[in-house]
Length: 66
Image (cartoon, rainbow, N blue to C red):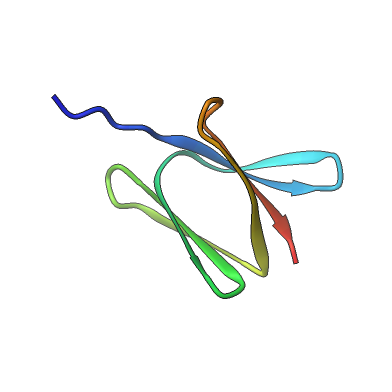
C-alpha cells in the first residue's frame, strides 16, 4: 500500500496566508517560480516567489514574494 503525503501550499503576504493549493503532491522550484502539482496532475505556477519553509509535520509549505 502506497501512502501519499500531500501538503497545503500557502503564499505569505505580510501577516496574511493565502492558499495556493490545498493538496500538493509535488513542489518544484525553478529560478524565481514554484510549480505545485496535485495528485491528479493539476499544476499551479507561482512566479516571483521563494520557498521559505516546508513543514512536513503540519503538511504546510510556505512561499514568500521575492
